[in-house]
Image (tube, rainbow, N blue to C red; front, side, top):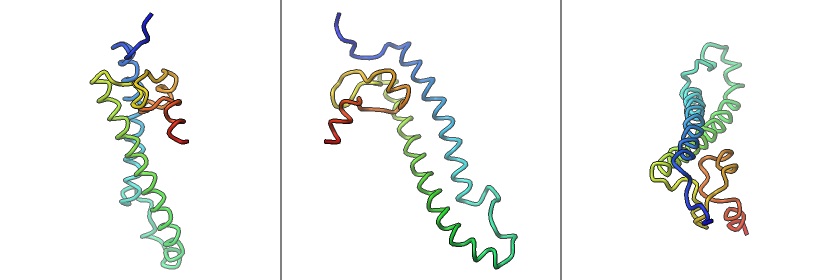
Length: 126
């Protein structure tokens, strides 16, 4: 029997459902991070005493930097998921971009935006 070169339409639909669920959660998390950066969440120190405000400024700066980093990572994750949806549409989803072989389903279920098999990923680290 010949080796499978792509996932079936039914399998692609299964992956689409997984990706859509993760995309919805990721977008919600990203929106919360953005809201906290813009102060839209109402969790600031504008209505507290000036002394407390001065003490909080250093912590707020650090917190905003960390939140910005988290938001950037979340946006990159969202973009990876969106690119995976395009690969599903093109019927190229799940094909390793290095080896051209199918990425195992277990890996795609865990990392649905993966474009490399574990073998190819490990080879790239050497």
